[in-house]
Length: 156
Image (cartoon, rainbow, N blue to C red):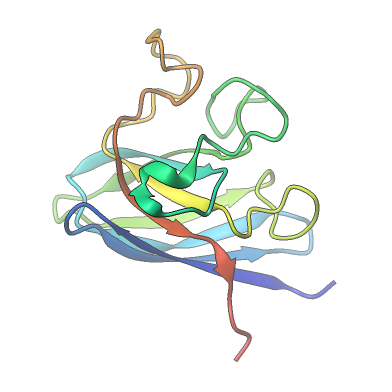
């Protein structure tokens, strides 16, 4: 099986910028690597959203990618959206270095994330444990401050 690679160019409010690379390995895990700058220091919810539609900025990317109709949770939980990737951490310089490995976000097959969007939120994701009305749907992660459509990467 050949390696599938994808990229997402992150843009957002007003200085959020980044590049992410997605690679699915032979065991089926997808690895996300990259860097996002222009964030406020601290934790930011990080999710795959259902739609690759940015016609209204990050607000048109739809809900979290959830093909199995589960409640929101942490990446390590059995009960979680496929798109629930937890939090990324921006340092004092506003830069988040991203290294994520996940089994529920394939780049091929029926539940592929190609053509969907990756979204960075303003606030920390409470991982479904916050007791807020939004905890079980969004992790109460706040506004969408950056996003990008996940597309196939050139092999050149």
